[in-house]
Length: 62
Image (cartoon, rainbow, N blue to C red; front, top):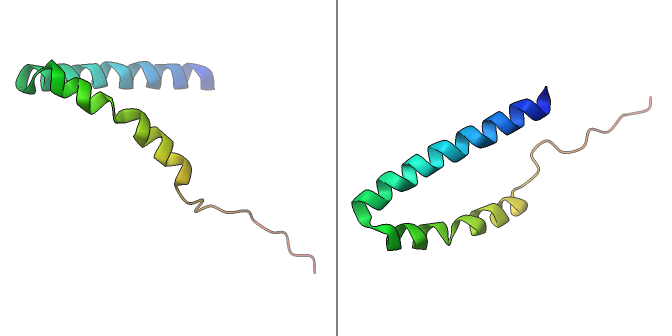
């Protein structure tokens, strides 16, 4: 069930992304969209440097 949710979410986001990039290409041009898409993997790499706000919970022995 979880894998179905993840695949559905991924395909949905891909469909929305292609529609947004298509509209952007209509307004600015395909070269501009290629330049924007060149920086998308950089955003993915930068997520590796996000802080871990959850942290590990320590069990205190009393």
